[in-house]
Length: 223
Length: 223
DNA sequence: CGGTTAATCCAACGTCTGTCGGATAATGCG
DNA sequence: CGCATTATCCGACAGACGTTGGATTAACCG
Image 1 (cartoon, rainbow over the protein chains, first blue to last red):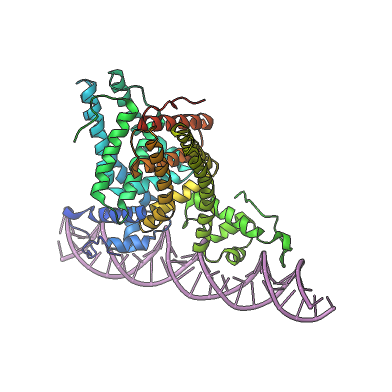
Image 2: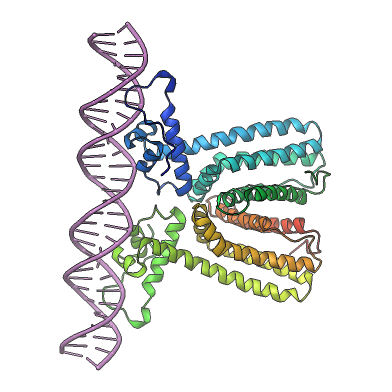
């Protein structure tokens, strides 16, 4: 099972410097497993083995299995949100510099999103798996997706008001954009193919799509 | 558990007329459960209960649990493929009638796709769940996705050659389009919201997207 | 030093899982 | 009718599951 393994710490109270260490290792191992195979297909003993600890240690640090899953989920999406909000802040600043700069900032924000998911594909896997659960879907949408969509829509509206876009964007456009990214990431994780080329092509596609949807803006080209 | 229940047939060899009946009921119940919660979260006893039969009866008709899952998967996608290939055949015929008619046929084919997934959301759920499995992804892509993508691309290229489209379509565009549909279906299955409006808006979005990507063709407006 | 705290593992629990052998009952066929 | 066939269910098995109590070990603190 490869094992991200801890160096197998002996029992006893840890030194103050290394506290909270095991929990991180467990969460990382669990996140990878949950992303790859889903909640029910992963056993706690398997998580423990991947982390190089005992089952009871996992429970000790993360409580129940459902709590462990929630912790993985929250951890991953906190990272995503942090990255996106930083990019959004930059985009907001660019709003004052005119619609052209604002649109470029929007493009940058899309890049940040794509980069993040490419670097951490577990995010996509965890997201899609929970997305499919019929009951939790609404809650998930409210809590994670809606703020992101609103943010992008707000930026698009602001850019549109500046005259660089043809029309304001409905929810469905942003959602489709996001899902195209998820699809790209899943396909990228598959063995075979030419990752570098695929990444390049996908970015070009996104650029082209945005320009196509929102009209010619003078930002059409750009190496 | 609601139960699509069979009327609880008594033991004994069935009449020749009603043979193969139970198997269909089991597959239907299993498909719904697998789609909603995934392979590992669904127990065979639960499938049996939903179908109104005993566990052993499920095994008797569908073999192992993995075989049951495969049967559900194959059944659902055989239906999808049948519908899509019929639409594709119509689109091919329209190619001879000129690029305008060909593009309209392409739009119709998209509609058929969306209609099918809306009517059978299990298709999307089963598809996405297996899509996420890292190892089976490539096989799945080869076996189910690639032919579909190739088909649409071929049609687009033919239409483009006729002068109605601006440029040929790379793989990534078609894939993004398909995923936008899946996202739409998942969102539609969620409680709350206004399904009728969402369906209307999404179709409008698809039209707009196609026109935006492939240039003004005179087919811009619709109803 | 001695006492407290905290992390780790071992072992066991009850439950649920997928699977299979065998009993039962009803039809089809001669 | 009598025999083979088939669908159905009951019961049981071995294994894996999530979870818990208790023992062990080591660091902190006075």
